Image 1: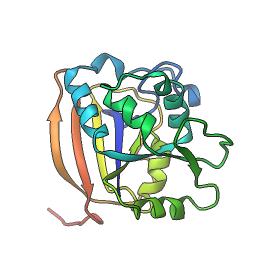
Image 2: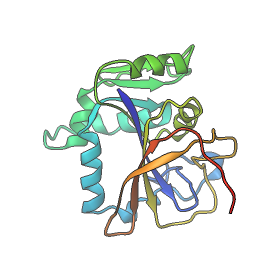
Image 3: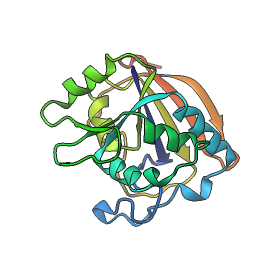
Length: 202
């Protein structure tokens, strides 16, 4: 399976707490819920399209706990997100989580996260999907384990918060494979990993 990573970002690269005020107040963050005003049919259609390609999920502890607190109670068979999240395998990368009670969930990464994720990639299937989980994504990007990025860039600047591409990230080149813009101005870009950056001079 290839690993695809879907993340919501502000124009200044913040990924922290897009979905609600209390999602993640770490570092005194007071801007939670910044993505909500931009939700529209275009946004929903893209999310459904992405989830339809999933064969399994890889989540960090924070995202897993947020998802597990909501999606198990959604039983609409026409809801692609709920159906996929509830039915498919979910791998939770955590060294501190003791229980993963949501059906089809398993904790990985207690001893060697890179080894565990590499083994998951070798399993048959289409996509092992990551949603949110920015801290986990930074770790896996550093080992070239993420194959494609779906970055949803929202037209808002916050000036503070956790950033996806922080200082020290592994230099990596990507190839843009698809781009679209929603009615509310969210730019949805899909990138595939393309090796190391090349350099030149003007």
